[in-house]
Amino acid sequence: MKVVKGFKLLGVLGLALGVSLILGATNPASAESPANVTLTSSDCVKCHAGPSADIAKDGAGHKKITCQDCHTGHRPESKNNIPLCSQCHSGKKHYELKGCLGCHKNPHAPLNIILARNITDACLTCHTQQMAQLREFKSKHTNLYCSTCHDVHGKIPACTQCHKTHYAEQSAADCKKCHKAHQPKNVVYGKDIPNKDCGACHKKALELLSASTVKHKSLACVYCHQNKHKVVPKCQDCHGVPHSALMMAKFTKCADCHTIAHDLNHWSTTKKEEVKHTRRTKKKR
Ligand code: HEC
Ligand code: HEC
Ligand code: HEC
Ligand code: HEC
Ligand code: HEC
Ligand code: HEC
Ligand code: HEC
Ligand code: HEC
Ligand code: HEC
Ligand code: HEC
Ligand code: HEC
Ligand code: HEC
Image (cartoon, rainbow, N blue to C red; front, side):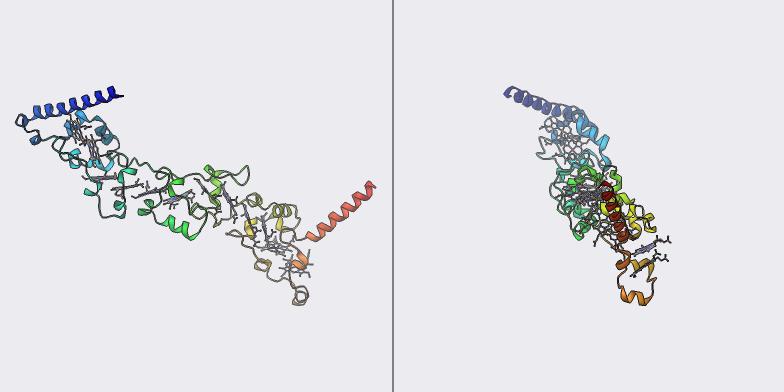
């Protein structure tokens, strides 16, 4: 270990010597005073291949400036030629963050951003809508960090990365028909929901409706339960009151005769079942 360190130190000393040699070579007047030497960007690459290559490849906006716009001076005269971001970036909320290099790991490739897993506040310097939604519609997502889901900037995760589907044949693309990531419990949907999507959790309703023999059978769950989860329509919304006031005075509720929407003949079918059942048991006897 010691040996390696020694070699490294030697290498650095050699490089430093190299600097003065090259500087000396480009400007004879600088032999005693290297500080007078003017370096150009084309000089830097001779010793610093890495940063030059990074800027050429991923420099983005930093391609518009030279090495020396940021690194004024050089060792040994200049003890610290590392710029502060704030020299050039100021006047936006984002530029008031601490630790720019924590995310912009490499200033020579400033858009190669690496996010830690626990970031929320920094995102809010540019995106405010999402947090507003997460707070308005409280759910367990509200307490997650933004970067728990968006671990790479701009990446949209699939729900199925962290959750199971409601039933086997459902796909990741289906989730968005009912859920939005920043308000997952506010379930709203359009008209294109197949009955089995609801049936995944409401087995009984699906079974009753599918087995029913009246015209409701051919209707979609979401034709009646429109738009928002847990909305329950009234029979009268669609039918008004198609019976005489006299009759309705005696039997005040539609359900008194029509039982439930999913099986308007529920009682009669139950009775039929009972009849079948007694017949079967009779036969057996
Ligand atoms: C002849 C080789 C050579 C040339 C040319 C050269 N450097 Fe250096 N540079 C060095 C050495 C050696 C170090 C010191 C490395 C260390 O201490 O780890 C260094 C260090 C640096 C550092 C690190 C900051 C610091 O103070 O430790 C920066 C930034 C830097 N150089 C920028 C530049 C820029 C910009 C140019 C072109 C204008 C340039 N260098 C040209 C050899 C060179
Ligand atoms: C936008 C400003 C900016 C520009 C332009 C820039 N640098 Fe840097 N450079 C920095 C900052 C900031 C650091 C310190 C990085 C750190 O601390 O991790 C740095 C670090 C360095 C270092 C020392 C660490 C390393 O990565 O080896 C060298 C050498 C260097 N730059 C060379 C160059 C060269 C050569 C160029 C031109 C091709 C250049 N830089 C252009 C901002 C800049
Ligand atoms: C010497 C001035 C200077 C310094 C110092 C500087 N930048 Fe820049 N930066 C610029 C310029 C100029 C642009 C291009 C702006 C434009 O295109 O409008 C830029 C653009 C950027 C961009 C956007 C790149 C793009 O293509 O959209 C990022 C990110 C960035 N800088 C981050 C940083 C960070 C982080 C630091 C500190 C490590 C830093 N800059 C230091 C001058 C600087
Ligand atoms: C938590 C991570 C994080 C931190 C810390 C951070 N940035 Fe950024 N920065 C980003 C992301 C993400 C973007 C958006 C990149 C894009 O548009 O692709 C960005 C974009 C930028 C841009 C270009 C777009 C713009 O609005 O100007 C600049 C310049 C910039 N950052 C400078 C800085 C400076 C300066 C600091 C420190 C004061 C800093 N950043 C701290 C993540 C961060
Ligand atoms: C400096 C401003 C800035 C910061 C900070 C920032 N973003 Fe962004 N973000 C942008 C911009 C600008 C875009 C649009 C880029 C594009 O369209 O390519 C974007 C795009 C996105 C997208 C993709 C949007 C889409 O429609 O595909 C997501 C997701 C995202 N950001 C999440 C985040 C998260 C999470 C954070 C915090 C870790 C964050 N951003 C930090 C500026 C920022
Ligand atoms: C539970 C995972 C999760 C969390 C936490 C999360 N997002 Fe998202 N985000 C997503 C998904 C998934 C999308 C795609 C749109 C959708 O499904 O509703 C998205 C979309 C986005 C977009 C694109 C525009 C939009 O609104 O659709 C931005 C920007 C964004 N998120 C930023 C953020 C920010 C900022 C935070 C933290 C305040 C955050 N997200 C928290 C999963 C998440
Ligand atoms: C990075 C992982 C991750 C992603 C991606 C993600 N979630 Fe979650 N989600 C969670 C965690 C963690 C919880 C909380 C689980 C717990 O505590 O039981 C959660 C909880 C939920 C809950 C229950 C909320 C509550 O308050 O009870 C719903 C609904 C939900 N997620 C839907 C989705 C949907 C839809 C998507 C895609 C748009 C999605 N999630 C994407 C991690 C994720
Ligand atoms: C037809 C609409 C619909 C679709 C499509 C849908 N969900 Fe749901 N999801 C719901 C409803 C409704 C709830 C229950 C909300 C409640 O309890 O109030 C729920 C609850 C959840 C929960 C909370 C835990 C639980 O099981 O009760 C998670 C997680 C979830 N969904 C993830 C997903 C994922 C992942 C997908 C895509 C594969 C998806 N959902 C597709 C309607 C849907
Ligand atoms: C992930 C499971 C899940 C899915 C998928 C789901 N629901 Fe629900 N649903 C629930 C839960 C849990 C309740 C609350 C049950 C309770 O309170 O007893 C509920 C309640 C209801 C209620 C009753 C509200 C009340 O006041 O009694 C209706 C109506 C309803 N859902 C319709 C639907 C429809 C229509 C769909 C398809 C678009 C659907 N559900 C999809 C889980 C789900
Ligand atoms: C969202 C609208 C909607 C709601 C709510 C609704 N229905 Fe219907 N109903 C229909 C439609 C559409 C038909 C079929 C009409 C046709 O094909 O002529 C129908 C048919 C019927 C029929 C005739 C059945 C047959 O096979 O001839 C009865 C009886 C009926 N509904 C009673 C009810 C009762 C009772 C309720 C409440 C428990 C109710 N409906 C709720 C839309 C609705
Ligand atoms: C006293 C029992 C009773 C009550 C209460 C009752 N109905 Fe009926 N309804 C019937 C009978 C019987 C029929 C005819 C059944 C048939 O033809 O199969 C009928 C038929 C209907 C039809 C089908 C009409 C058509 O033209 O095909 C609709 C729709 C209907 N009822 C809706 C309602 C609604 C809505 C309510 C509550 C406001 C309600 N009913 C209350 C007994 C009742
Ligand atoms: C014709 C309209 C209609 C259709 C189609 C319909 N519902 Fe309903 N649903 C209602 C009405 C009206 C109620 C209120 C109770 C009643 O009067 O029967 C209800 C009640 C419910 C309830 C709460 C009570 C219970 O039975 O648990 C759930 C859950 C439900 N429906 C789910 C579904 C599902 C899932 C589907 C599709 C398989 C569906 N509904 C199809 C009209 C309908």
